Image (cartoon, rainbow, N blue to C red; front, side, top):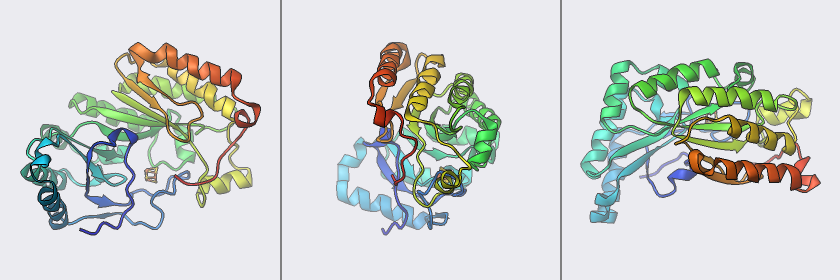
Length: 296
Ligand code: SF4
């Protein structure tokens, strides 16, 4: 099967079976993102999805029976209607009968577009561990980043997921509020996360990638990025304020200056020490860098 989209998957899904079901992003307008430029959102036909699963079964035979987790590829495959998702999950179960968890990226508006009955049926079908692009807890910042939803909407939709027992892994970014507002942002983001109670948090650092609006905003002086020191202080403040003992915290992206990960009830102090050490000891050149232009 030919898949024309690019594939980005969360680092924690490195060992997961990847199944393409969509290409591109329904929003494709966040100022910091160039991941799906020139890739319009589209859905693979049910025949193509079945073709991919059949090919996997033919290639890997009985090893397919060991697969317990499937990651649905695309920026926000949760945009598909519950009916379409359930049709695809039924196919997955036909070809990979021992799958327990179906995970994928979901935007807040994807969840808002699902009824309570939809969420209940999707949970029943094995949908869990949805990756949500929370980014940060400040409404005005999310508006400037053109995220397409605010923190209040994410709060409401994640609480709906919680009510149906659908766990979520929240993705947040350091530096979204720019120079001078890092601590304010850390406090708002921690308050939001403490309320919506993800079971995993993935944190990375916002970067000005080429050909993004953010890159242009920095050139024009519309957005002034925080220094690395401010970013580490934001991360320290955010982590320090989290009250989620069972939550797994991952901040080890190549864009992160200090790489840390662990379960908060066991590793929080150790991670805070690593960040404090970074704030005090990283060399002056890297600690005062303000933005990196490149691509993922
Ligand atoms: S950050 Fe996510 S939601 Fe925003 S444009 Fe990129 S892929 Fe789409």
